Image (cartoon, rainbow over all chains, first blue to last red; front, side):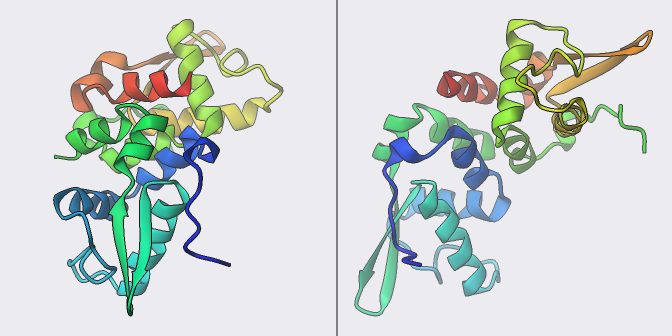
Length: 101
Length: 101
């Protein structure tokens, strides 16, 4: 499976988007990506969660159209697809993040 | 287990609230409860989903503080806990429902 497929947001359902956000580790990753737009799997979450676990969470976020991953050398750099996601689900990410605080 | 326990919203995490909403059938139930504030398991969803499935979804919504269920005679009547939920997660339910349309 190509794990770096980035879906068209029109193919992402609201339920799938909410599912991607419905996890404390993924919420933390998304928050970190807001604060620091380019993170690899090691820096996306630093609370001792295994890198493989973070990678799996990033896969879920990518499949929901929340994260774009690009390969730079030996790194995978992740950023939020804020504009795409907000165009598809207006206000949703901002409201979720406001409620995470 | 008492299936009619209604949690204090302060004990509901954002991830749990999002999980409760991250299902197309539960989103449909919540929408119907907005349109018609008092529904039993038979009327909460009329697309042929088995009543037992609806009851399970209502349990998830109740555990997330989204639904209050009271027993009236032989019926269980459900309503949204809009005020409680919005006090805990401002704007979240409205944003989710706006994106469901």
